[in-house]
Length: 269
Image 1 (tube, rainbow, N blue to C red):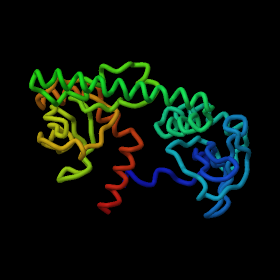
Image 2 (cartoon, one colour):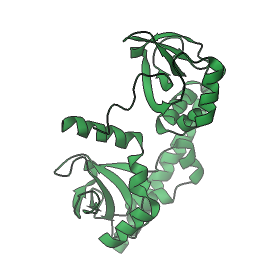
Image 3 (tube, rainbow, N blue to C red):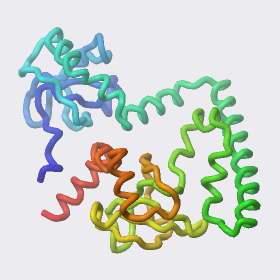
């Protein structure tokens, strides 16, 4: 039950407005009118949202809450947001970055969209060239597994940064979520690459309950986290790498991990 009911409708709760004139802006719940309506405030000097009444169904709640009393004034609300650094914490979340990226793309000019198209074409050409080259090299070595990892490492860093893609490589040490099979819903780490469609994964079993076995890549959902291990590392070395970089703790703090935990909790009720 600990993974559920954390985003209460309460004074101080930071929320995203999903419909209306202020759609896409952040606001803070200041007071509760009834079961369907609340009074929100940006405040206007911070997020551009004036104090007004709004239906709850037009709000998407976040994990952040400012410590204010019910009906707090704008000055007290600003102090509370600054004290807990709420807006900076929200800006660092994956969800906030996705919203910002959508807004940036939405407000791009025709010339900026043209430059993005050219950059994507250049990136695609580099991908194809790098894949062809790495395939040829790995065939000579007798290892087809590292084709895409080697290819991605040969790409121009400027293009990778511009596009925001190619950060979740299929490579040893990559943390992944199993989406199908007996271990569905559990986390694992890629240990070795068999070919272009299969990899060897390990929980390890003492940490996530996943034993070392071979698995199709299409049954894995890769994350942003990677442990520093060599190809074919043993379980002891894997555990040390996960503990050293605190990988599992970082994963549990993500929004995606919390959503998965909440679904599991509700499923087992």
